[in-house]
Length: 234
Length: 287
Ligand SMILES: Nc1ncnc2c1ncn2[C@@H]1O[C@H](COP(=O)(O)OP(=O)(O)O)[C@@H](O)[C@H]1O
Ligand SMILES: [Mg+2]
Image (tube, rainbow over the protein chains, first blue to last red):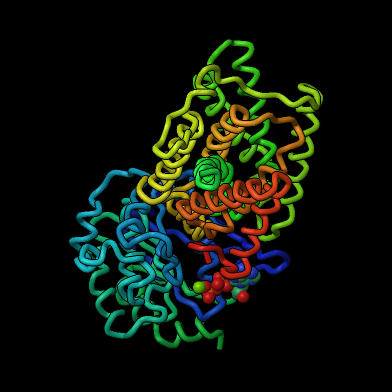
């Protein structure tokens, strides 16, 4: 097995006295798309926050390109090329659409994504570039959140429930755009509660249940029964 | 004529009050921190200006070239080493710590400079004036200070809404966590905001020292003027803060015109009237 791009090793996470993650070990290979599924409260967002440094851990619990990064601050992790589209989009309300994109690009990492290429991908963001970002519809805001993450030209992009709260037709168009977004060589982690959606675009799946990995494998190896058992714990 | 003169002088004084207020408004906007020691930093800057002009023999306007960066450096260091540690969900720690700082600065200045009133001399510039039609005379110095105040407000406005730094300020102000995800180190951004705040304080302090006599105890009074200008103008609106400063300056001068003892009272009354009519100030921007 080649060296993983990103891995977590027996990762634990706590909110005060409450333990949310119990020894999570996952890995993502270069250019691989990994889905993380699990019911509400399973710990998916906590895992994303741990990887991105919003929750800080022991250094060796998160490894990036062979380097222990678990104790770094979120801004240091971002500079390494790990970007996230956070749950609930979380746009900056005082910034215009274009400023939200530019703040994503201010680290100056080189790569294919610029204001222009992001606006070519989502032409609407060009048309409405001077509008406050939060004046857009939910689907349009999700485009801004994705564009903002792309602007840093990351090596891996974490999507936390990008379909949450969006109309089915919007979800469909975002998932249709995903191959162009992830493109050549970039890795991704796609967190979803919608099993079918996540599995359809990913090379490998992890299922979380109450803070533990309950199932993992390639989509073609996993039966529906096994997934529902791992998902619901029945 | 006396009345028109009082109003005119009040407007010019308002520029100085806007300088007192701008830094206060800036750091509140970026990190919701109320710096109780703000006025004492103004006085500290005035003493710094005094020391530089007397020991190096520089004119006060040249002394600004030293005072402003020194104050900015103090601001950055203070934020990184002390104030960042106090920020969190609880609003009390930063209040207590900056209150403590206020006491420390006052006593430190008292120790070094004594309680005697001091003044920074600006030489011939102090008495220079321009004649306006209708027997009015306005001093070159107040006019200059007002012009600088307007330029500073315009500059801060530009930084805040047009520059990459301002974008970072607003992003961190909106959502600290998510701003970190964008690679912004909020500890550093907060440090820059406090540096900018105290840079303006450096300017305000030297101007104050040229304009009136000062001693280590007058900081809290300047803090109040700054607060009142910010609140009158509306939180988060820099041009509003300038207008707030002008309203305060004009009211004080009108009060003094009626009865010299009413100067400060008239300013506070104007503040209370604005609060009663528009509790969020005249032009609020922050909810
Ligand atoms: N800020 C928080 N404080 C305390 N508990 C939290 C916090 N955020 C999440 N949790 C708890 O941690 C567990 C995992 O939550 P989360 O990672 O958000 O799950 P998911 O994203 O899979 O829905 C849940 O039990 C949730 O209640
Ligand atoms: Mg979640």
